[in-house]
Length: 386
Image (tube, rainbow, N blue to C red; front, side):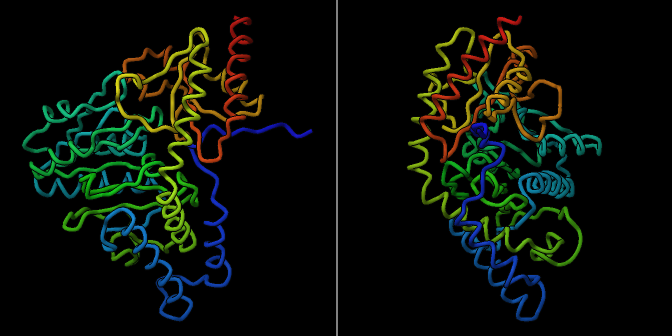
């Protein structure tokens, strides 16, 4: 009998929606032209790209000319941070602020900028994993060029006050970038309400294809290009466009926007059911502060299992057919404790006892019951061995 497999790692990636895949297939087979070719094959591909760009722009409240297609969240993050910083340097602004809980794509870019002589400063978060606006404001300087704060954290689900931070930046002529990769799958983003000058999105987080993302760059915001090559993406990003993936991203985003409200209600109910079952176990606590009224995504929650190493817990969960994570998939090979959890004030030992659970539109009540029961069994097993 085949082992039962349950997926509780939607924050890492999501299965592609069958309707999205159906939209993509013609651009792998019949309409396979290069969107920059001038013949009929190329024109068909370019028409599909134009339609996708218009659709993405319409959904997030942008202009089509503000939408740039990338290879995913990492490239969008890199481009916004590095391209933004290099543009600011030309104006004599070399102080860059970023929250301590950013994705590794942002943090690695910050490390690179620091080696190049930029002054990098990190914004702390409170025990709930949230940036406080006052902490941003007191760190702004005359030579601050760029502020980077993600909209929703990928390890805790904590939603950040980017709207207020973006307003502060606008008043002072400072660029603001927000990684919205985890936010968009669950909330309908409007870039005008958000206020950030640049926004990153990645298709595979909302049941679209892997390897395709968006960087929104507000009109009038000039940043340096990151990928050199041809004149694709209006001369700002070289490389042949992945037409099938671009088509898939636009359709997946449209489906997400149509279904987000109903999906959030369902996922919130499932989360509450799971937490009610698991938090009653001895030595289990939530990393975050849901009870204090701070806002979190319904799909991502981080639990600490006292006295249990997360590697052992993950191994036993996998043996039980359950996929969960200790944190970001991008850092899964690292033995270091989560930088997000230690920024929230957890010790290294506490961080290494923590597990990220992330559920999605296909999660069922039966799966919630099964995984909660497995948590109980595994804790009993591991603690007895100790």
